[in-house]
Length: 246
Image 1 (tube, rainbow, N blue to C red):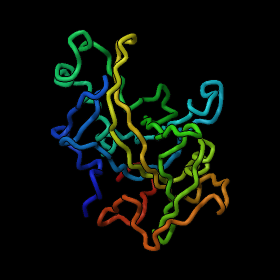
Image 2 (image 1 turned 90 degrees about the horizontal axis):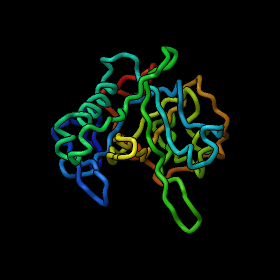
Image 3 (image 1 turned 135 degrees about the vertical axis):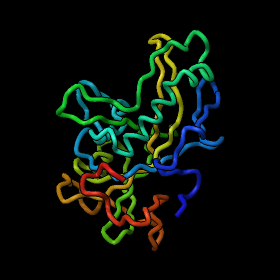
């Protein structure tokens, strides 16, 4: 079954199709000349998540990201996908093709973040999408609940506290995210890649910390489930128990 639009399953993305296009002093990532939107596997949110307000995140805008745990198994297929992206952006060929001569010795900041402690797994950070309007910034990332009958409900998420309630600790999630752009910071002599979270689908596990009531959800406009752009594997009908394999 094919995925709608330009979305690709992470297992279908190959480095041969990756390239960058310069736009307003940015490097936009392309996949065969189209934007690259990737569907992740199901992941159990058993660590990290969306930060709450603290001394490191004193403002709402400081919290607009989701950090998801990845498998400690180096042979895990989604870990392999993230490493593939890191290897591409950290390659000599990428530097020579897209970075000016004076920036080709810059340090690359990998997408795959290894933990300094064995207590925590490696992780992946994705930015929550926002849009600026007359009333200020609003969240445009879509949060979707997948019910037991495989029908979906869209969640009302207006701020980061709503987002935390939408995807509680130990819930099962899968994501549609765009491999957006490459940032370059000359003062730090570094560069890296930004992932933007377009949609996140949640299937709460029995162990999830659920604090919200039914009033936090609004019915989808469609009577029949279309999984909101997510596509099921031919043989998969539920998220894996460990949440870390496709």
